[in-house]
Amino acid sequence: MECRRCQGLMVQDWVSDLLDEAPVFRCVNCGAIVFLTLARSQHLTAPERLPACSSPQA
Image 1 (cartoon, rainbow, N blue to C red):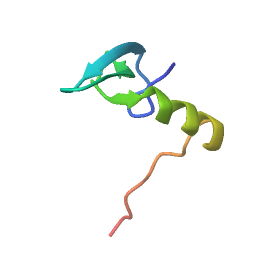
Image 2 (cartoon, helix red, strand yellow):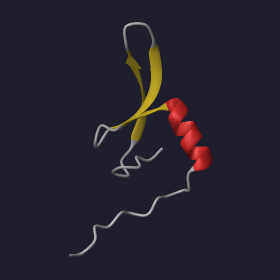
Image 3 (tube, rainbow, N blue to C red):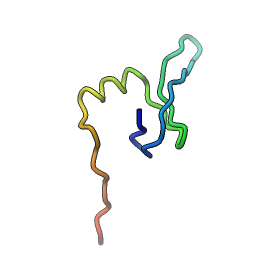
Image 4 (tube, helix red, strand yellow):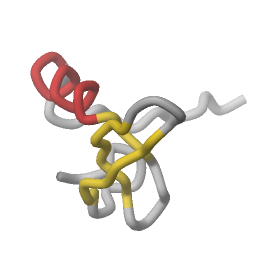
């Protein structure tokens, strides 16, 4: 899986709070964290690659 923020490598990891643990994908380059359930729903509904945002020239 590729990071949507920096196109780096995503690895599966776990995060925990006081009551539960949840599977996540974590980017080894930028540290972005995506919950597995969100990644699945985004993969089904989002386009393959989003265009880069460009700031307007003033």
